[in-house]
Amino acid sequence: MGILTFTFDMPQTKPVSFDKLSLKESGDSGESKKKLQQATKLREKVYNALSKHRSYSDTVQLLEDYLPYLNGIVHALERPQNESDVTTIAFQWTSGLLEDSASKTILAKSKKAVFTRKNIKFELFMILWTYGYSLCNLAADLVRTATQSTFYMQTKEASILFRKASGIFQYLETELSKASLYLDEKKLPEVLPQSASTLQNYCLALSQIIAIHHAIESGKSLRTIAKLCVQVYRQFDSAKNFIDETVNHIRNETPTSAKYNPSGLSSSSSNYSLNSSTTPISSSSSQTNINEGVRIIIVQYRILYRGITLYYLALDANKDEQAGLSVGYITTANLQLKELDIFKDVKNNPFIPEVRRIYTESKKLEGKYEKENRMVFREDVPLAENLEIPKGLSLFKASEFVNDTA
Image 1 (cartoon, rainbow, N blue to C red):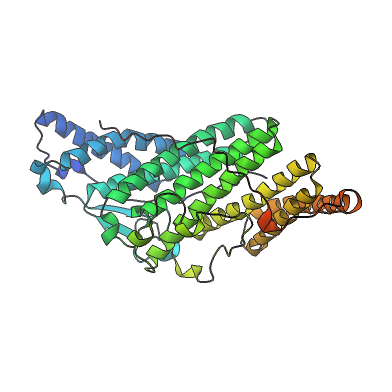
Image 2 (tube, one colour):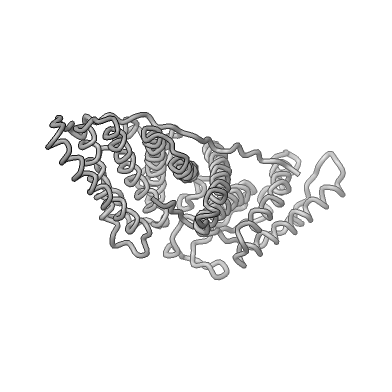
């Protein structure tokens, strides 16, 4: 199975000048003014990079240059003597998670809704989201452009970037949980901790998928690969739960505070089953403005790795001459893979040809295993609900993000 990635839309913004601020600090006022001027220059470079669609690597570097100065301003505005400056500047941003069809106003050439806040934390959060998106897209480019000779090194670098992005989203999840921004900005996904948790799990899952490819190439045991696949399923299951909560909040179906569960799984899915069949996207999903591409790739990966886990467990059971068990695993695996047919009409869906190739191979194994068991071993075939699923094996954690100040 190839490594399929998603390219996030980059948020757009308008220029900002920090020269309007008259920060009162105990230190050198001249030094403070220089830092504000430098922050304005760096913010202008970030604006230009986003509006002119500069490379993701350039954008990452500019964001890393700007962040320490922005943090310095955030900390300064938290001091009582600077209270009058808090609402001086209006920050305008579009979302990287909303569809273009959500447009009600226009910012530059974007058709997305524009969100305006006179809140420096809003600027900080959106810069961090943009940083995370940039790292994800940079990693995705490395995966897509990898050749047979460069696959290992490029995907290894991509895995590092995904874990770095996951750390940023983890930081955002923590900070957004403490903030009150979501209380009065109901339509912007980026102020919801659920959105950050979605992408934190998404990034870690892709890093784990890369590790699975490396494990297969290095000859790791079938059982080990199956355990790695279980963890990918769990991470995408968590991502799906969180993005569903985001969608519900955007559609005003349920209050955010009533559903948010930072543990990674909703209470209804804590005892997850690889054998359960679910409807991935509801028929009413068109009512939401959340980018459908993000939701679809998460759901497809969730179903796919449910099936691939069972596929590798079937191979492992067959190796150990557990004929009836191997038939049970491979039959259930194919039922899971067959679920992906509901996405066959999605335009330009790279999953479908890949899944059909895997499904064809897996169906051949099903026929082979059933024949062997029927003619030679004659073992009972366990029901799907009685199949043992090992615990997931997680290889990575999110890289810790430290928000430094200039």
